[in-house]
Image (cartoon, rainbow, N blue to C red; front, side, top):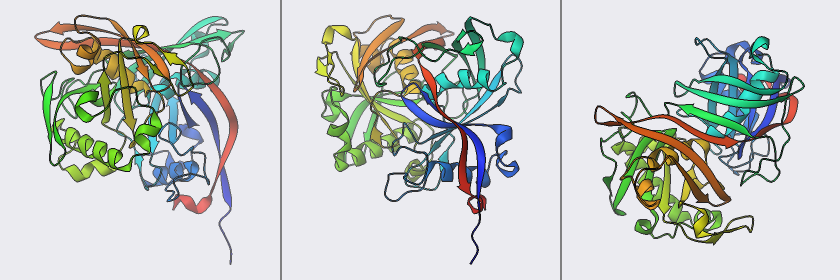
Length: 396
């Protein structure tokens, strides 16, 4: 009996923010995978090691969590005044599909440095020393993101003293600007898809909750922690070790997705794991983070816990941080009220791994809230580069 050989594909394994993923240049992929469709999805699933009924992704590059089951495809931009087109695929761990419905804000921090190092940014735009401004077109959500990447002696500077809670070692700071991060009226409607900053969410057999539905960074459902029986200080084990709690969150997420207009039937949520996110907020409280760091109530404006791909995130998704900053800037949202209410241009929130600061400026235009930009800092570095290998028949 003969078996198909393995093929090798140029790839780079990178950390961006509190996530890791496998990065590809579009033209390095096999020809059939350079277009969206079954072959591309099959390739990425096999690279990451999904679907895995054991939930470990042992036979692939995935790390068995939503933060590490990620893929990125980059190409020189086809958009005017942009350097790179950035396509993100969230790979399901236990099911055979790739979710293309949203962005990864954390991996955005690595896009700029990859683009510079791999010839996707014109040489005349790259300073020998200083900051290289990389103009990113985020293909999934059709938005512009600006990455400010430090350069030293013509090379991307990856080492530094910037500390990011949720990441063990310090690195160089990469400032990220998400321009016009709110939805502009396509799928799911405008920034507030229901037209309200607070809604009532009725989930059969579970309860009736106040909720803020927002499309900014990534579609997100915000709830009050106390309304669902939590303090807002919870770490991963308190949620992820409770199968009933996870099922409850998923049901709430599905009904919220329908109310946001993202799905038409509750059953559709099963095939749309990446969006919307669901999060719960509370007023500042002191707690001990997952690393043992004491977070004092006076050091944060509010607490936020968010779930991704059905599990409580160990820190905070970058796109959800954009949603938090945007919602905090708009008076009356649950996020804004948890932070004390009123006008604000930045918040520092507590998450399971520590704290994060995100800024956003909100204004009203023609009676509607508009956010022009959200800003936060992350870090990124190359972990490994070379080739990934997959069996040739994976593409069939």
